[in-house]
Length: 220
Length: 312
Image (cartoon, rainbow over all chains, first blue to last red; front, side, top):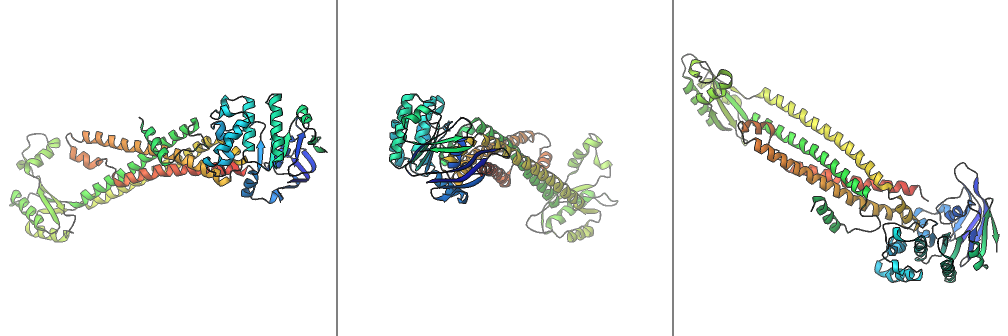
């Protein structure tokens, strides 16, 4: 599903942030991406979501080399990737419902076709009371759940989540983790970037990708 | 209810609002205000250019249609009879609509400001003037008329104001070109002001562009949504500014008509025209308002394209 070969990334004229990354993400797999702050976890996620181009090396996503994709193909691929941003990136002028439905709206789908689906997901992430709330009046945890729901609404083939449990209490973190595990069973590959050792320990059968000194170490 | 609100309601009916871009924002309102002001100024300039052109054409047409026969006093000739004869010859001549001799009393009144009241023209060798108006429909053979007058009234001189017409034509052309040059400058400054204001308003929407991009919206979809949004803002500003300009011209027209009701109204009306914009003026204002809206939409599309080109 995702294949990196000797990938390096450098910002400007600085040193290489990521060096010689070679790994694969298989369909229906679950992995934690971890490492100290500044190790390049977010950069690696941005490479996987095609928001950055590598300085060197080869990246293939869904069987296609990313450097050969047209803009429209990148857009089409992004519709198969759900992303949970560390800073949520919810649109302040949209309600929770509208934020979650956004990926479906930009695909040109009619609201009547997805309304029930969005409402069900809202209930599932515990935001049933916040259908018409705007992000400005929601807590960090509520925003995080809305951001997760927005990533899940398209039933993505690949889910990339940057610290998705960073702003929620342990109980909700466990619930969200169960959601990700269920999602994997339905065919989605999951990559969760986190510092939270407790969270990783709850699902210790998951593969661990550890970034340190610009290199990636894989623990199966 | 304010005119701007009515325009917003009509536009909201024509273009149902979508939620992707915030319908109301401080930057959006500021942009509408900038567009309205720039449209108003450009429409005033364009309308003024049209008025100058119309008035100049009116001057030229009035003077070029008017002839004067001057009947000079001559020894052994009856000035009054010569005047009537010359007027009769002119009236019968093809292409002449009317010939109106200025009476001695009218001449005295016209000369009064210079020569003082109680003037008796019989004591002075003052020529008599006949105002002749040519018909619009039929051409006048001026040489033939001149020949007829020379034969019947040798002391009559026909003047077609050729020199005046030439000077007025040059002046009218110069005035119109000056108005066009000013309009050009206003349009250039308007384009720059609206482009920069649109870019400023777009700066607040970068986050929206980024999020739409990362949830899989195609570039043309994002560009189309922003273009539509900014076209509506441009129409709100353009129509508001255009309507304000039309109202300004109507108010100035009313003020001028009140002023023209006083003494000397005919001369003032000839000099300043009627302040009626006519279809050309309204068309110019409409084109400017629409151009403003499309310029805003194009500037927003370019800003979106620039932002998206920086994203993979």
